[in-house]
Length: 322
Length: 294
Picture 1: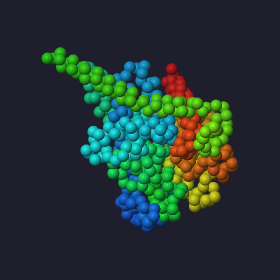
Picture 2: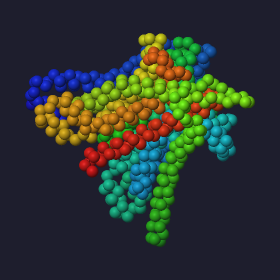
Picture 3: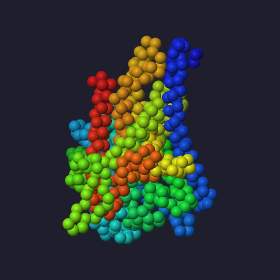
Picture 4: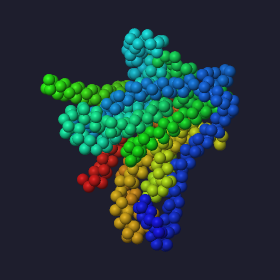
């Protein structure tokens, strides 16, 4: 070997006797690696194949169709795409400030003894299964939204038109709030990681110029970690877009474009959960799979973007369990 | 004037600290409320027979009779079977992929695998269920709803998690260890298995534990694969129950005894997952300290 391979930690030795063991081992682990790569294409392939019927029937009309009509067998995905986007937007609007605020608190403001334990407890939020959040949403959050939050929103913000209709507690808004709870640990944990990775010299420089604790955070630390926080937020968005159980249990499950935050609605994920196994015939089945394919495309796009951002910032690998 | 400004800046700084602290506090409220509710409603139904007997038939209490709460035995058994088989499928694949990505890294493929696994962890879990369902509808419709397809759907979720966590574990092993082993003439495959993997073992096991934890809380991919059943394990080609599935199916039912049962199941699930979560953190913490030579 005349060209050195600096990336490989072990230069290949001259031991021909052990050559076969190494070869077989490399082949086996390579197979596992190939398995991970093949998985993505297998998922894409199966979904593409099964959505063929719907695609041939509706073409691009499927993507812009606002109707999901089982009786006339006309299917359009807009009700679910809009439900997905609106609930995720609510989740980010509520979850982002809370998550980033707590990340800032835990990395720069909190007393040292508090940082580890409180951070761990916030991350435990991610460990609670989605279906348990849904159950909680059904029996605790939903009724609270119905009797307290939604009447108040209607009273003060009813003039906007977005907070009209009967307050039921099983609607777009409740689903969005549940999603906010679920994205907080994701955004908070990775923001914390990027904030903690800011060099101490940044902080010291600002403090030595006489900045207060908060000014240091605002001018020297947060801007440095900005793209990491952005990546964390997009990752949280990815989680909100595809969350199924909690949303299915709280959104009201109605196949129509929502007209207000109090409308019952449906996300792509909840559509699949509700209708995949009891579809009325092959066309609806195929349409549901195509909706799933759209969800897959959206979440792949969002996750690739988030990972590219985070890989550049952290240069390591973190937070892969969410 | 100068003093005023400085005082104002200090006040502002303290205000923002309090605000940020409030964010952390508000973020914790849901966790407290979920746990409180599960203990309040699920606590009373817990007993030894709750863990072993099967779910009851639906029942509305009338005057003079009471409804049997039954238990979640079949769901616990189902979760064990599903997650056990899923782990048996996904751990070898994920671990192999991790070894490939770390020990053979630098090649483009290694990086591609890490990245793909990272992206796969973000793919909605329901897509895993749709994928397995849609595949088996073509391939063999008779076993679409079965323990086998349920396990396959869970392993689609577990493979990327095992890959990423094991990768991180392997990366914590110092290079000097590998070099020392290779310098002694130990071939690369034995170095990897006996030196690197053994050194990283606690963290590798933690990674596997994390993926098991995640899989045992998933209901979405099981909706159209494992499907659920009131009975226990009936063979790999028959439907099977699981804890999260039971919670979903019973939570929205109108029967009080089913709802009570679901709260009990939720409490058990929370307890199991919190224990596993805290355990894994402790192991990783110890491991990191040891690697830093503390």
